[in-house]
Image 1 (tube, rainbow, N blue to C red):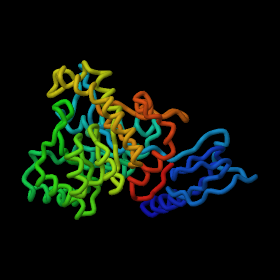
Image 2 (cartoon, rainbow, N blue to C red):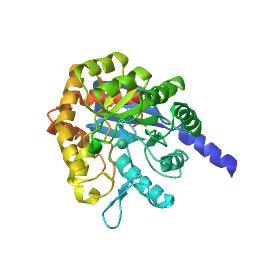
Image 3 (cartoon, rainbow, N blue to C red):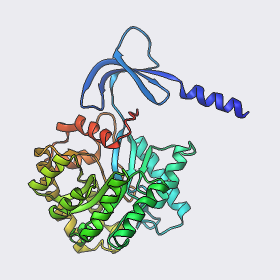
Image 4 (cartoon, helix red, strand yellow):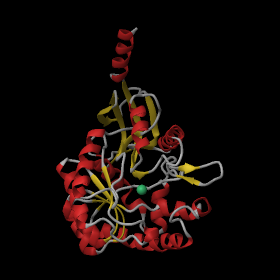
Length: 355
Ligand SMILES: [Zn+2]
């Protein structure tokens, strides 16, 4: 029986599929028309002009593109039976089930890779998906988060090494406070140097929750690779990001989700009236930072920071909700639709194109 299963697994892995497509967005910024994509196992091996041969799938009247990548999400969070926000204060089995459901819905919306930033349960769910026990997108996760109270510089360096050994795909660092608390730098310069420096030394991508230009400069110079939020970035910092190849992930959906569903959050922790006012005020600033980032040709990726079961939707060739939100702030998502697919794929770094 074991031999039979192994044989089946290797046959399935080697299975060839061809897809005839009218329009192909290739994930590298280009578009091709009337081509056949050949897939063997999980790899795209060939793209060639369509011929008379019958393909496995005929999508000649449709557009084919790589799966979307959400570079920042919290699929473990959700709303409870009283319609209130839940972020980890529940039995881990329950948290895992909600996360599995959220990830499946995200996959069905067109996102084949989701980076979760993060909760320990992310690793459990990621490993179950990788083992084939659950359907879902590929999950990359930081498993944990570094905060200002996570320890002194030596402890932070140790945590980075420990989490890498534990299987983290990325390191998540909170250099700034939540925008609901003003967004000022909260980690010390020494903590930033240790967390970003050790991540770089360990060859780990490190993405940082940060708002101000000054703190952003520090995390970049210390070796971190991605900026989350960044609403108060100035031209000099954006130019530094461009020059250092730093990814910018401004995250719109998260604020609109909070504002749209305010009653589900209000009264929990810093989800106060004052906190909601700050989130409303930051949106135009975020739009300005994104427009400036484009002017400096910074690599902008698509992260939603989705929580509370918020899910980016992708139906047909419509843009996902995050893109729609950016357009509402005057940022014109169609203009770099193809570019964002390509940049997210580059940030993913392992070069594995997925359908
Ligand atoms: Zn987040």
